[in-house]
View 1 (cartoon, rainbow, N blue to C red):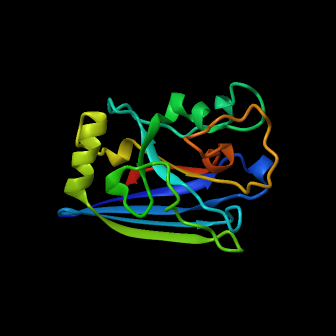
View 2: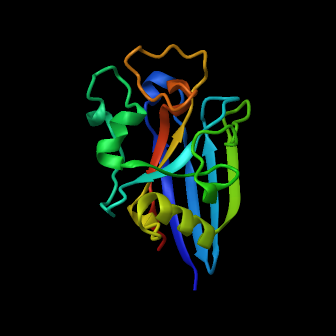
Length: 186
């Protein structure tokens, strides 16, 4: 028997970015397969968009970050500011989610209209095994997770206070542009 989860993805930091990125995600667990489908609209155009689910390893229910989390009051909620309510970055939606290799260049790139569609089948046993080695549990608990879509043009001037450097990737890559709570589908 399969289990279906969905998330309505809404804009964050849109006042500063100038686009209202939005879309929908669908997750279907069926046997040893996790089918992931994400479609986004109005993202910054011609830009690679990191996308992940975030959460708490202890199973605490993650929540969507809002401007309340802008603790340095620079007008943007950056990646570190999301952690208090959304937890840590867990699983990437790249070309190999089950490898959980977060910083890489294998994420979707939006077209000139800011649209992209991502769809992949993931071997659930491999993802659960890797998830357990990193977080101590093999239960993905999708209904306790938050999706974040990240990424703005390198041309966008960000305040010096925006944090989120991951390896050689700067805050332009990690700045959240959209978010959504994953829920069990009706």
